[in-house]
Every structure is written in C-alpha cells, then in structure tokens.
Length: 337
Ligand code: FE
Figure (cartoon, rainbow, N blue to C red):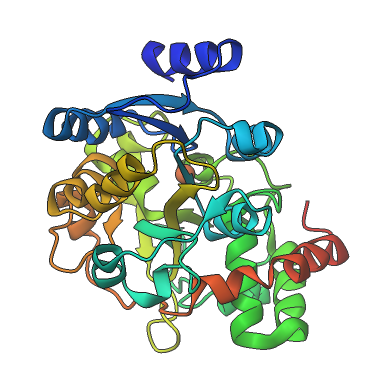
C-alpha cells in the first residue's frame, strides 16, 4: 500500500470523519490498486469535491459501516466481487437509487435489480497453463476437474471471493450436484494445497509446481506490463484459455459499489457514481488496472487487448450471488481448503 493510502486508513481508524460537509465525499474503498489515485484526483479536479478516503479490507469496511450505523459518515462503498456487494445490500449497508445514467450505461446483468449496487469494471477469471508441457490445455471450467490434469492444477483457497463466486456461477449453470462433483474433481487435481494470491498461481507455472492454474486476467496483464517477480521473466511459457467459449463464456468478476445507507453527502455520492461510468473513469479502470470497462466502446489497455477477444459469461451476477451459501457448503463438503 502507498504511504498516502496507509495514512488514510490509519487516520480513518482513529479519527471520525466529519459527516456532512459541503463539497466533500467520504469514500470507503476496498479496491487495493495504486492506479486508482488518478481516478479520484480527476474527479476532485473536475468537481471541486474533496474525496476523504478510508481504505481497508472489504469485510473490515463492511463491519465498520455496520458498527457506525446511522451515524456513519460513509457516502460510497466500493468493493470487489458480487458476493460482497450482495452481502452489503443484505446487511442494509447500502441504499437504492434510481439513476438514469447508471441504469443506461451499465449492462443490466452487472447491476443490482433493486438498484442497491452497480458494477463499474470487470475481470475475467481464466485458465493459464505451461505451454511447454501441456499440449492439451483445459478448454472449459469443467475440464479443470478432468482426471487428465491430476496433480497439475494450482488454484486459490475457498476463502477467496473470486473462487466463491466462480463456484456460485458453476452452481447456476450445472446445478448443485453437478457443481459439487466438479469441485471434488478440482480438489483431486490439485498439485498442492491452495496457497497465495492469483499472482502466486502464475508463479507456480513458472516454478514448475503447477502446469495449469486459474487467475484473473489483470494479474497476468500486469506481469506483461511491468516486472512481476517470478512471472514476467518467463511469461512466454504461460499460455491462456478463455474458458467455455462454446458454452456460457468466461466467468467475469465484478468490481462495483453503491451509496451508503446513511450517506450524509448523498448528492456528491451520486455524482461520483455517475463519474465512475464516464468515458474518462472507465479508461482508468482499463488503462490503470487492466480491467474490462463495463461501458461499451471504451478501449482496452494494450496487454488486455493482446490477450484477445472472447465471449464473457453474461449470467446475472446478482442471481449468482444467491448461490454463495451453497458454494460454501460444497467447498466444505469436498475439502477444498
Ligand atoms: Fe485482485
């Protein structure tokens, strides 16, 4: 974390933010990308509204919002993954807004049907493999459970929200029994006990520990763009597959947010959300963090574009999020650590 972000967190933890203040916006953000700085400063420059940022882990921020209740100074809550957006909605931490701009610019499957949260950027969760050793890489998520890949697969733990939502999507497509059989097959194929983040799954391919792995696209794009230890120097040996191109399409992970239930600066919060779907902000998601913009027609960053076009799963993510308790049950049943 950059020093400024650390200060924001530390100060936030000790000092209560002023609630209503003309020309201010209190943002609780679980996005952890340094490149977001520009996203915020351009909004401040354009509107004269100062953003007071509290950054932290999604669950900690949600707990804080909950504890603060009606006295919370939070105006906007930004986080990553539909599961957390849904949780925030269910806990009463967000408020619904009717907003024609958000409604029109964000595809229907990427926003809450009751307007409590909106998706602002996406990432694809795809298959990576060792091009030198794997001649027949998996083409679908189902293939990840194929015994042909026994002891070859590296994937993160079940505590990771990206995997939770992936399994929730599998339940949506295959039903609970099918998804359970799939998860059991994945566990059987694991090359090692789940460990590390998405980048570590890519490192596993380079180190030879794994032949096939699963990661969000932006981690790979970042390793193409800058020097990521243990990945970039050998990136040519890593191939990728956008899964299920003849089926539902690649699973997409959503980053989004909504207006806090008791937002003292509600008008500024609405302006901020509208800004997030502007061409300019959408470009930051794309250029700054190698994400896929949700607004159509916004250009992709070069390394992301280089990965090629693909079919994305357009399943309704709010509906998928309802399968999360079942996904957790399955993870426990099949022993996916
Ligand atoms: Fe991430």
